Length: 352
Image (cartoon, rainbow, N blue to C red; front, top):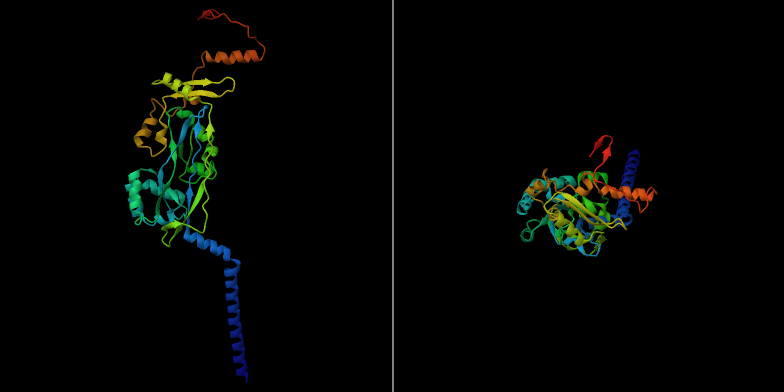
């Protein structure tokens, strides 16, 4: 009798454990299927959908009469997901070779972004037509590599390079300091001049394009389940510079070192700002050859130096304007005051 009761007790405990297990299983299924349904649905969609950033067109730079000083040109760059391409070193080497870049530079970009990052990363900028055709022809062999439109700055006229400034890839220090909010590794920002000062206004806001992908990460086409977010282009900026006066100033200074400034005294706006020698801003728009960079850093000519801002020169007679203005403003002299200048000055026993 005692043994029967023990068997019944064991059976009851076993049934209770089975019921508890079933209850836990049903409860977990309820949480997954009902309470967390949206979260897991979103995760599943993320595994089958890849987001690609759509670059915004940078704002135009115009002179005081609305004439274009800087606009944008179409360009294509190469993108890839670090978590996928970092597993295949031969793929990276092959793409780098065909696009005419050093493979170590591509790996350096991947390392900066993180090798296991799932976010598409800019790998190679400004590829030419033949390189783009080659990538398209070998798309099946390069499932994790994509080309996308990546507009570059264009300069219809060559003038005022020091004033307009140029773009460059954001540095690690700028990323760490948060100097340019919303900008990711590999993107270009204003480095000098107006491009730097008004970068936030000119840059605009990136959009997002959603693509469906298979289990191997290959793009299948637009994701029908998610709507694209269009980019917002940057604001155009009208400067006080006058293209005609700027061109005149540059022609007067051609071949010489120095600077020319022409200011509207009513507003303080610069009508012309010339620094020479200067540089060709087109060199900063795409990939710059090492020999060009060497010329730009030539210590004898220093074309990167903005002489009207960074140069040190004796003021000469120009400073008379500042002194005369100060004296008039403080009532020390009036507009009828004259000074006789014989061309020399005597101080004590010395005349010069």
